[in-house]
Amino acid sequence: MSRYRGPRLRIIRRLGEIPGLTNKTPKNQTRPGQHGKAPQKLSQYGIRLQEKQKMRFHYGVTESQLIRYVRFARRLKGSTGEVLLQLLEMRLDNIVYRLGFAPTMSAARQLVRHGHIRVNGKKATIPSYQCRPKDVLAVSDKKGARALVNQNIEESGNKRTIPAFVTRDTSTLRGTINQVIDRPSVGLPLNELLIVEFYSRKV
Figure 1 (tube, one colour):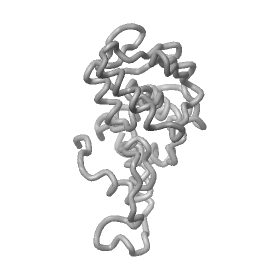
Figure 2 (cartoon, helix red, strand yellow; figure 1 turned 90 degrees about the vertical axis):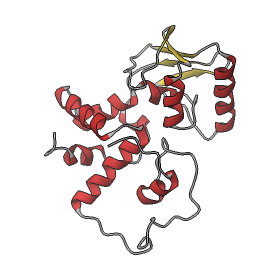
Figure 3 (cartoon, rainbow, N blue to C red; figure 1 turned 135 degrees about the vertical axis):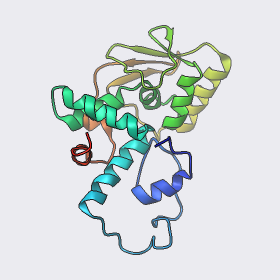
Figure 4 (cartoon, helix red, strand yellow; figure 1 turned 120 degrees about the horizontal axis):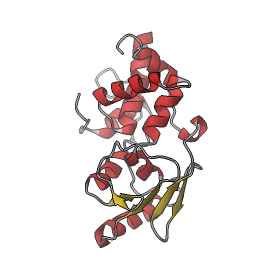
């Protein structure tokens, strides 16, 4: 399944709040479609599918990528659900989003792909690059890139809070990863255990 490029507010109306997908709020809160106003009755499979879709749309990953992350998380020590979230949160594009350099995950991905982000002084163009504690991210010296990031920071204002596991220096447009993120700092309204159960028979 390829990356979603359709109407984003439609997804918000169907799945609920997804901060990484868009920062807009739909005026109509009912579910999309002809039967959107009807009471919603989900099966156990539907509940798990909905949680999986929330994660996929928030982090902007494809289905095959998410399956690989689940397989890798199962091989590591600790709760599979929490390890899965840590792997996704430590992606380079997510760190750029978390630092407030971009308003959405797709915008953060574009910044990385265009070579505007440097990790420890080296240009990084792979959004899925796994960052580590003590890594330092910086915006390139290109005027266009720095102006765009400054604009994103100003527009976000107090709406976005910088989580404790990263530190941002607005004057130099640098960010430092202090530690691996813990579950309370994720701030994403989903149940990762249901996602692990969804893939239990597929992976």
